[in-house]
Amino acid sequence: MPDPAALLDTAVRDGVFSAAVLRVDALDGALLTEHVVGASSADPPGAPIDADSAFDLASLTKLITATATLRLVDRGLLALDSDVGGLLDSALHAGIAVRQLLEHTSGLPAWAPLWRSGPVLESALATPREAPPGTRHRYSDIGFLVLQAVLETVSGAPLEEIVRDEVLVPFGLTHTGYRASTSDPGLLAGGGIVATEVCPERGFLVGAVSDRNTWHAGGVAPHAGLFGPAVDLATFARRVWSARSRGLLSDRLWSGIWAPPPFAGGHVLGWDTVAPDGYTSAGRLLSPDSRGHLAFTGCSLWIDPARRVAITLLCNRIHPTRDDTRIRALRPLLHDAVARAVDAVR
Image (cartoon, rainbow, N blue to C red):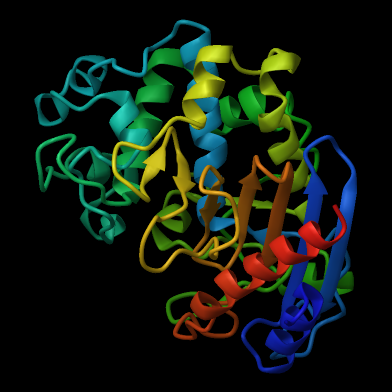
C-alpha cells in the first residue's frame, strides 16, 4: 500500500501539480504528520515551497462563508429557515430558505460567466432558478453569491468584513485572507504564494484568484477568493470541532453540521459529506460521518469524527493547466492512505 507522502511525491514528479502540503492533525490539536513537496511554480521554475506557503483556496472559501452564516444565525440576525425572498425583497428568490443556499438545494444554477452580464453580484441576483427549492442537490456558486447578498443585508457590513470578524479573527486564521485581483509573480519568491494557473484571459496567476467571477468582483466573493496556508485550514478544522466548548457556535448549529444531509452524499450547512455509493473524493475508509470540502484548484479539507483527525491538502492541480484532472483519481487514494496510516498508529 502506498503511503501518503509517496503518493504526493509521485504526483509532483508526474506533473499533477507543482506543489503540495499535506497535514494530518488530531482534533485535540496535535500535529500527527506533515509532508511538504514541490516548488511554487513548474514553468517558470519556482522556489521550493515550505509548510507556510499560501495557496488559492478557491471553494474552501465556502466553508468560511458558511461558518460566518451560522454565527450570524446564532446572533439572531437571521434564521436557517428565513425566506431569502423576504430578506432581499426579491420575488425571484421567494421560497428559498437560507439553509438551502448552504446545502445547495435552492434550485439555482451551478455556475455562469456572470461578469459578461454586468456586475457579478447583481448578475447572480438576477439569475432565475432551474428547479423548485428543495427538489434537488446541485452545487451552486450562484447560490453562495445570493447568500452574500443576504449576509450583507442583515449585517449591514461588506462580505470581507463579515468574514474577518466572524471567522478569520475568532477562529485564529492569522495568515488567511482575500487578495486584490491583480497577479504578482514576485510573490513566488521563497515559495510565499504558490502559482495557481496560466489563465487564457489573464496570463500567469500568482496571488490572483483563479475563479473569474471572483476576479471580476475584485477578488472578494463568498465562494472563492481566500488565500492561506495549510496550518490555518488545520486550525479552522480544530476550531470547528471544538466550537461548542469555545462558544464559537451554539450546540444546535454545531450538531446540525453532523446531521444527515437532505440528499445522500450532498451538503449539510455548507459541508460536503461522504457519498454512500459511487465515486467519493474522501475515499472508502474515512468514516461515513466525515465532513469536508473540495476546491477547483485541488485543495481539500476533511474532518473524520470517528478517527478524530482533520486532513488538509493544499495543492495547485490547475498549474499550469486546468485541463489536468488526475487529481480526481488521486484524492480518494490519498485519503485512504491517510486513514490506514492513522489506524496503524492508534
